[in-house]
Image 1 (cartoon, rainbow, N blue to C red):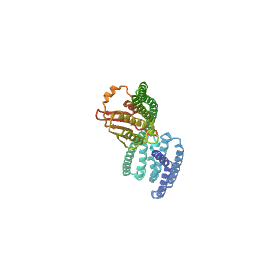
Image 2 (tube, one colour):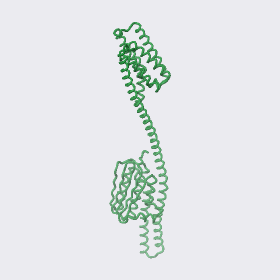
Image 3 (cartoon, helix red, strand yellow):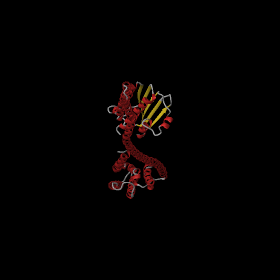
Image 4 (cartoon, rainbow, N blue to C red):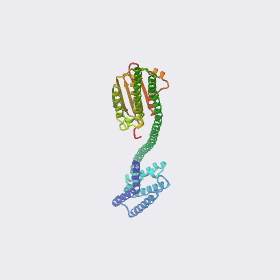
Length: 417
């Protein structure tokens, strides 16, 4: 239940039972002071009739208000009759003002806006008559006193009424603001849902594109390594088949054997890179640490892995993409950099994850490299394509003789999305 609803319920409870309570209180006080005020028998009978009329009036209204909430013709009629009963009772005995004060309540619910001030002023007249000693005033001084009290009551009523209108305006503004915030929150939630759907769609597209990319990469690697190795082996064996010199034949057989071993190693490396096996049991930081450590031991290079920030469980496609980029960057380092030290850093930064691979190798000129291979390949351009498929980016900083730095930045998409 909201605060506004609770307040409305309390007002409804007062409107139903409040008039009876005020009428009973006024009756007790008036009857207790009837002798002191010199009420006649006729006045007592008149008060009894008016009290009975007030009870009937409120009983009838209790039934009407259920079907006609808010200002209406019936509300105006009820307010006028209730004021008339209160005025008549106060005329007979000023202490019935405890009941007549009911005219200050429920004005907004019974009267339209253009009649509210008139209703409040009429109630102020009744109360001013009670406070000045009763109606009608019996002399000039009593009339002056009545006028002064009426003016004071009217000023207070209109002042408090003005404050009430300001508070009502602020309340309406708060309600409007809350409604606007609810609409904004609904729109924001819809945007978040759409964003999550777009993320899911993006990852599906990345997965599909990754399959095609792996096929192209594997084809390129077969061409660049296995096919060339097999061609070299065939060439060496042809020399062996065409020579009668045992020493020369042995030399070419040794070369063919070495090429076969090298090609077998390249085939194993290609198969290993075909799927991120390291992610099957470990998270990305552990998989990267194992990959980097294993690579450093195999290549004889001093390598260090660092993870910063609060580790988050990443979506499989995001983790696989970053691991692929790290493997490709380390592969490039092994092929071209002749580095002595390599540093790999994984950083969780709010809504993003960054992967940095730095080496102190020979470096290169990125512009010259782009001119040499404008259509890209499976090195830097392949890493960049991987990052861009999941709405990320990849930057390369390199300079001949001063090493290379590769930085991939991708959105942090958690595993449960």
